[in-house]
Length: 73
Image 1 (tube, helix red, strand yellow):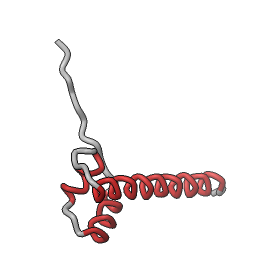
Image 2 (image 1 turned 90 degrees about the vertical axis):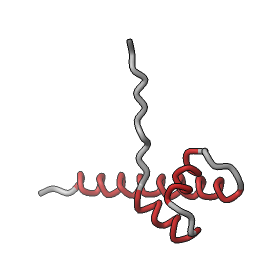
Image 3 (image 1 turned 135 degrees about the vertical axis):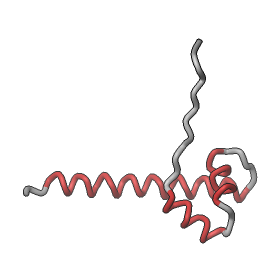
């Protein structure tokens, strides 16, 4: 019989710290807001801001990886 295995989503810890410092909410509330377990205006703002910062960090990493790839030893 197949087991239903769920994995926990991992969140960018640096972004969580930034949002925590900005809004003053707990890490738990921020994670639940991102997942969609919390509803409301603040939870929506947190989710949008997290996604925006996370996408920007991914872009920055991709750009740096391309720069490193182009460099010759």
